[in-house]
Length: 50
Image 1 (cartoon, rainbow, N blue to C red):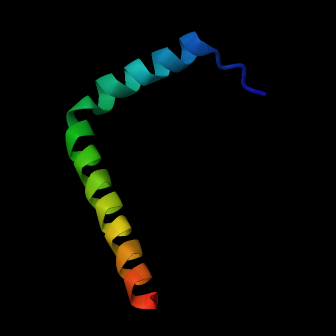
Image 2: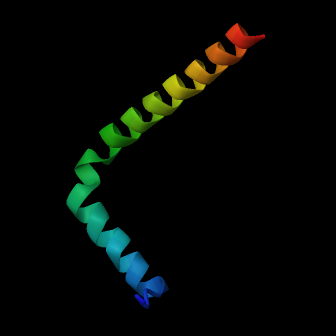
């Protein structure tokens, strides 16, 4: 349906980086903290089941 090639995807990523680049470090930090919390919850659940 949409014929996005490599050039278009690179252009979208570049524009996104220009628009949201200043928020990227804080966003990645919150994603990392969420992932760490999720993994900790999974480990806690596995320990309580055994």
